[in-house]
Length: 404
Image 1 (tube, rainbow, N blue to C red):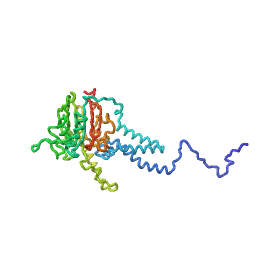
Image 2 (cartoon, helix red, strand yellow):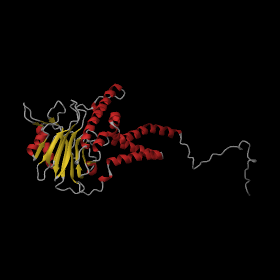
Image 3 (tube, rainbow, N blue to C red):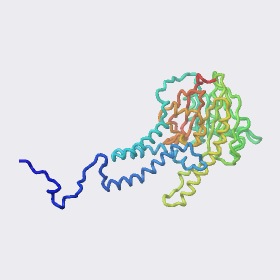
Image 4 (tube, helix red, strand yellow):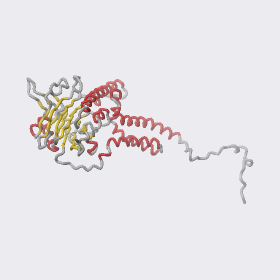
């Protein structure tokens, strides 16, 4: 027996005209209100996170004169990777594909910056006649000058670099009242190992409180086929009588019959009293103002000195190596301005993060060797050394086959 089919005429009056709701594949169901509230709260945290990562990535293109604060975000950029990964996981769980794409894109850019493709697939074998260059910020600190000297000797003996660029190792020229004075980390290497100290005849008059002196001396190894120093000069970056002013020594040298230029530099820092050690109270604006003002002033002054230094480097006609303590990371404007078209040696041939500061718990890479294309980077290493607040950088170079 067949059941009768209901028609509008046979339906009760109260049913006629009621629209029956059906699911459409083109119109997904509206999420429950608790889920929407939680998503809104997530975005309150996630959008600032994405902005911080984005600004940190482009900070190298933003001049510190106006965008000094962006340089702070650039320094902390690697440490925003973990929260960005966690946020990306949330977008997967909630099936928010547009937001997932935004997180993945930023993570890809950060990864490519930290681990460039050229570092992988390298097959370069070190050779005995490679040029070994070391940069090391090693102030006179620790239990004694003798202990510091012995530690430096051990490090130099291990790597036998051809050129050592030191920072915060003061050498003062002779005067009428006293002979030449050398820091123990310099004197120990010169007296105990086959190295010679080379400084300009007229050393840097900056900072003004240490006339005829330099805190960025270079040591050269004496061996067959040694580096020959043609001339040196202290690069004047400003006339400020400031103990924290940036310093640079320019050396014109010959290696294996070819000429080159090396700049040993130490860019402006905050001095003994670091701002991150200040007493900052989160809800007291009075403690934040001087804290941020110190960062602003240092970044602006450093930028002006970097401009002066970069103008010297840009005018060079010979291959250039820029070596030293930048007091800035590879994501910042100062680094990008000095790098130009040069290669970051550790990024090309290093292993691991290469963090150089602080030595006991290294969390940033602020010591660099930048080399022109006339040099091939064979190897780069940051040894686990802890008798300074920095770790040294050791780079092995050789002339490129295409170099003139």
